[in-house]
Length: 224
Image 1: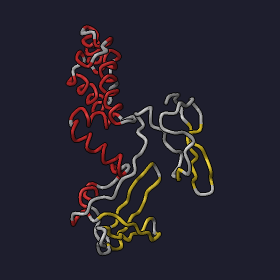
Image 2: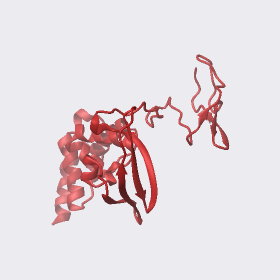
Image 3: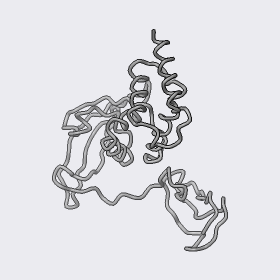
């Protein structure tokens, strides 16, 4: 029965020329959503003639996100595009927050709260909030916590009382070919090029001093 339904769906998609679609205007969003949900819920693969529709929409969101996305993330974007874009922006700033328990994500932790965070298969972080200090004159508060039994502390903006985050350093955008990212945190000590100067691909643009390791950030595109 399942095989017959799969063949009927493939036949319908093929007859509607979805196998050769190359423009979003010809790729109904509802069709892509239905194919993804069918795969997620029923565990049935997308028919060959439906892959072009799905890949067309998936390519767009990956370009916006600047990274590859999972099937679950893709389905979320198809159903709630604005919500997913806001969530992706939070992940870009704070990391993979999807591993946090929902109440912790929305309301944070209180003193003596303990959570278990699975960051990958077989690797779990045990986080326990020990205490939260007073807000200083810069709007920062010190949070004392244990990470797998080891005491830690970190200063964060006290947003509960209106403090804003400090200046965020710009990061290289994965989707921007003109951005060159450093392989590790470091300090730019000098510049080997000046504004408007023509450079060749693979030439060293500036040295990167990271602790005791000296490296060089190289241009991967020629230009000026």
